[in-house]
Amino acid sequence: MSLSSALAIAMSGLRADQAALSVVSGNVANAQTPGYVARTTNQVEIATADTGPTVAVDGVQRQLDLFLQSQLRTETSGGSFASQTSNILGQLQSIYGTPGSAGSLEQSFTNLTASVQSLSANPGSQAAQSSTLTTAQSLATQLNTVTNGIQTLRSNVEQDIAVSVNQANAAMSQIAAINHRLQGLDSTDPAAATLMDQRDAAINQLSRLMDIRAVTDNANQTSIFTTSGVELVGNEASKLSFDAQGSLTANSLYNTKPAKSGVGTITLTLGNGAALDMIATKSIRSGQIAADLQLRDKTLVQAQSQVDQMAATLASSLSDTTTNGTAVSSGTQNGFTVDTSNVLPGNTINLTYTDVASNTQRQVTIVRVDDPAALPLTNTSLPNAGGTVIGVNFSGGMASVVAQLNAALGNASLQFSNPAGNTLQVLNSSGASTLNAASVTTTASALAGGAPQLPLFTDGNTLFTGSFSSISGAQQTGFAGRITVNPALAADPSKLQVFNTSPLTQPGDTTRPDFIYTQLTSASFRYAPQTGLGSPAFPFQGTLPNFVQQFLTQQGNAATAAQQLKSGQDVVVNTLQQKFNATSGVNIDNEMANLISLQNSYSASAHVMSVVQAMMSSLMQIQL
Picture 1 (cartoon, helix red, strand yellow):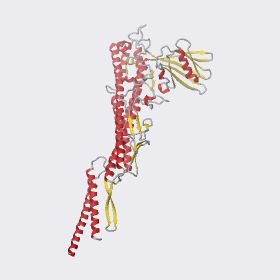
Picture 2 (cartoon, rainbow, N blue to C red):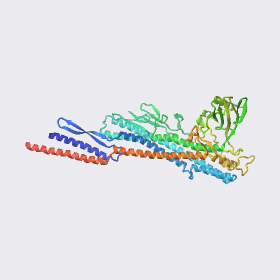
Picture 3 (cartoon, rainbow, N blue to C red):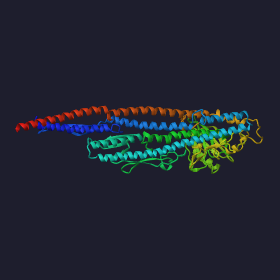
Picture 4 (cartoon, rainbow, N blue to C red):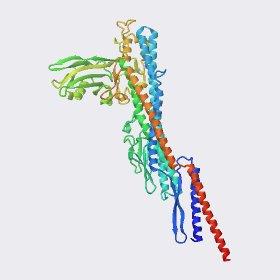
């Protein structure tokens, strides 16, 4: 080997060591920098005819485990989903209060039943009457507070979605911008490594918000998709928009038709201008945004349905009166007549008949609806009724009612007519059906109407009848936020005992207090599947205390399960993050070992150059 070749080899070694030392220095300096991926130099052998093989640095290489990175992003989405769900459900538990503690929903209900029991023992006591009204109003206020709390959580989640959408847009724009900057740069270019770190950080931020899949091509361009296949970043970044609705109410519900939706909708505008409803297409399945959508549109809506059902049952159980129809016959046809004089909007006429051909018993619930725009009703409009639900407009008189019912139930082989006044007659079709029962359920409006039923709880100053409106929907929706003690009863507490004025109810008569206590503690009711208890085929049935205990327990279990899922997901994410850091992060011990090795190599190359210089000097002296 010639001296010039040795000198060239040593100089190339020095240059390679200098570049490697610079990389090690950068690694050490950024050891604590979030998202920084450790680098190593790519050293290649170069052979030339003049000097022989030398070494050169061909860029830098990021130490990255792509599979582990993908897994970490997936679990980060799941972790964000679990964390947000646990956070909101924990706040919901605070709204209900700790069972058995003062100020909790459960304790407020228990206080009411205890007061009514005391009233039954001493019905004429003004103190007992006043105490009952106080505890009743306390329960109503507690339901109002719970509703306000639930809707505040929904409103907060709505605003959180708006913030997350802005963050997602910023991340997608950053990814696209870095893609453009990386065009023309080799992946081993030191400048490219820094840009790729920044791009990875933006992708990681996006993975916290939603479930994504990143695909990088040979040109070092990264495209981002949701796991459902929707492209978020391609040649350009798509853009998300969210029409936040501000403060939400119980009637602010999601609808796939934007004009009918009471909450914000996430729309994705693609690079070609096409728009996609990300909620209707279920394109976001994990991450914080998905958690917020589920909480806003399902979890918290169900929680509201539960307290609304509780409020509605409280009111209707004390005010509703069901009167059986009178059996009639006409030739070979049999049936019943019912008096519709006291049927108010939302009140029902109830029929049970047997289809002879299939020997199947069926139920029909006919609901008075005075707002034609609210028709037709569906079976889900009154989910705790069971069977077929039909809305009928009574504003046109009995002739119109009969015509509507014959049109709606003619196929059921039932015939309706109006013999006189407000009497509705229904007969079976001989041989095709058997009418088993008919009744009418009405709402007591008077405090002393001669029966123990009374409107103890009202919808503000309005009776709660379960009515329907095209503007506000079902009266039951959000009723827990409006329920109050009947103002007329608050002005005359004696009506908690006096239910008749002619003859006047005797001071010691316990009929009404006993009725109230029985309805609140031991009467059984059917509850809507929308409450999350039971199913359409097998709705939950039980007493009010059973229902309250069931849904509070359900919510408590959901909060506990969410917390456990969060804890488990935290372990998974932390474990993956540690593994990722171990393979892709900066290890100071390794960098120090590399530094010593490079220093030794640098010293060796420098020593070779020194020896070559000495030899060349000696040769020069010999020539002289």
